[in-house]
Image (cartoon, rainbow, N blue to C red; front, side, top):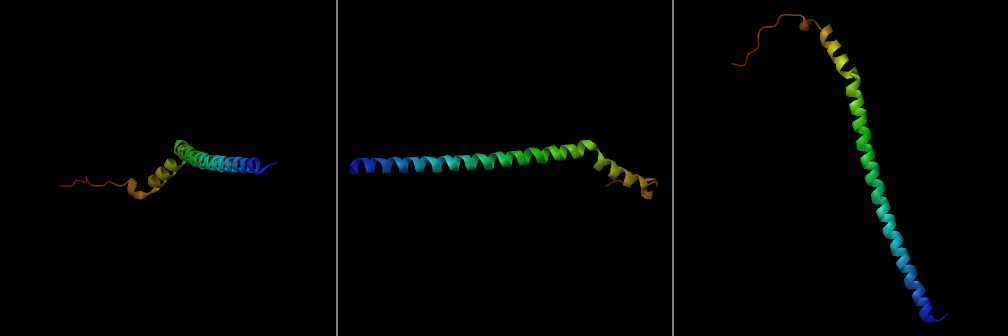
Amino acid sequence: MDVTSTKFLAAIEADILRAQIFELGVLLIALILSAWITYIVIKAAIRDGINESGLVRNSWERTVERHETRKSDLPEMRAD
């Protein structure tokens, strides 16, 4: 091998390394973006599941119904 082919191989290796670093950066950004989107979707699914189950709403209504002030006659409230 002569000096020219050694320089050529070094240049090719540098280009390959640069391309690999770029690909790694793109893959890292894609991984972070997909993890963030997955987090948002799972969070929304859990929130919708809790709301659809009615457990939160029913427990609150039961607490209010048990309380004595719910049964009392309150005067009409007006903001005059």
